[in-house]
Image (cartoon, rainbow, N blue to C red; front, top):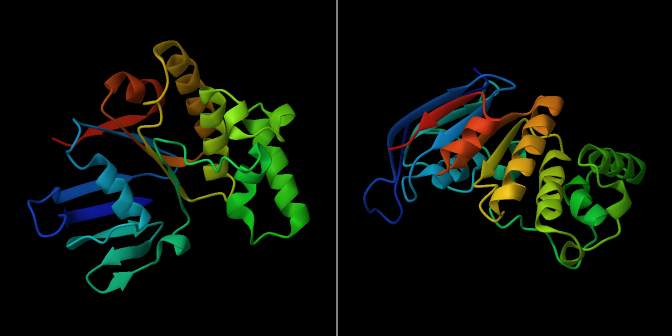
Length: 210
């Protein structure tokens, strides 16, 4: 398995378990949906996989490497995990192109520019490279955020309620576009949502947190 989460336990400040003995496995290239009501640990699971939180117990293995466990810990920046947040997290003072390039600072300038161009083509927005987030639509902002997450070529992409800020009509269009981009890039992905229709439109398989 590409991702293996085994017997994960997590709580905030010693309160009741948010996740209790939770396990999950993903194959490479799989798009897995995680469904469940708000407050049941879906977003927390993503934060644990990304390394933004540490589990109280259990292990997380990505591509054969243990990144979290009783005697192992790999920092978030070394996990090659991309994270897409509900609010998109775009920098308002940066152009579309500079937002996409943000995680590419380790690349030489020519390679960085080529990667940004490729991402702009992927999301069908090359003509909007110099626009700012406030000058483009919500659906376009979402595509830019997705391109920024994909640009460093993460081994694993985590999407946290990516459609929550879109109206119903735009949501349907963006869901189709997102699914097509993920399959085109063969990205291994976890998408969490409380809306089962979102997951059914994009994901290969769906798991439930109750």
